[in-house]
Image (cartoon, rainbow, N blue to C red; front, top):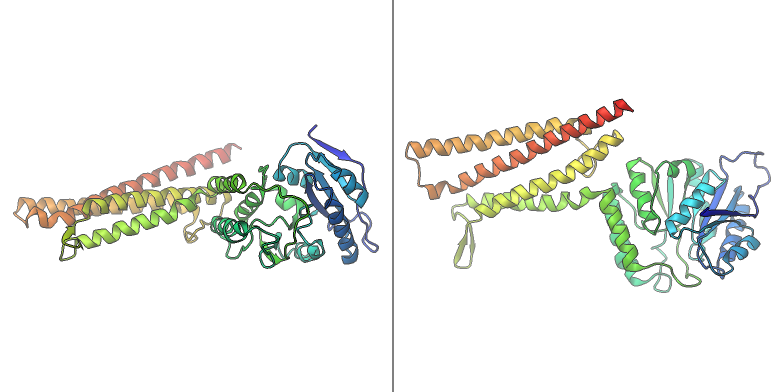
Length: 405
């Protein structure tokens, strides 16, 4: 077996708490890898905090293959210890959640960085059901002694910005904090799979998919005891890859919008009296590039929209990322109608140009902007209409699978 229980204390029963009432029992989960110099201090601080705050609970240390005396030190300090031989921060936390006796989980680190005396600040909103996940933000008190500048000013803010966009959060300053509190049943329902540090990112993005309420609470950050297990480049890449897999639309919508806007502006520039854009002594006629930009832009946007629509359809919710007015079930027909109308406009313009050529209209050179616009409308309309048909099929397939199950 990969997971092994080690004998240890069960839980701290606070006087006055109802016998057998585990609804508010708190389990503090501490993943641990070679932390013998700090894990005992963290366990004792957590137990003292639970006692002083009148919170019934236990401390569960998940030993993740330590080769030092971490497990023995944790047991001596009053923790219950579970050995998880499959390596990885996320793997250890997932095992801790599974093995926890409490219905409320507090996850932290065994390296002394998180101030366990602040734990009640995270527990109370969860106990009162004012939030589903409470996160202890570190950045307000982080210093160069407690957090590397690259993590504090670049890595964490960049990942937090991506996760805010992926999850639709308005406020999430420290998405990578490992000091969190939540109900076991709520997070277990997310079916988290990450084994590494990206576990923190997976929890937040999937929480947004399930409409869980996330609360940010500043709790500070202390200097660690011992060496860090974080690999900046490897762990950063794992976070980024996970965001791409869980919320790919954020990498399509904005770039697509920029391309489409550029194509629109260049199309308008083709109709100016100068018939283009003056660059020094040259006159650039951006007819062909405008069409390319419009088509690539709309196709990129549609890929992002389809990703967002598909997830909204599975969740039975509205589409996010600025698309909240469009309900999932109305997307396919809206897409098909828009594509058909755009196609008809392109055909109408082509018909007008054909009629002018028969009856001796203006020179062909003067009609190039209209011809370019007509072709753009045909290509854009065809793209939108095609995506509408694909979405219609996906919707039908999803309903068939749902009926069969």
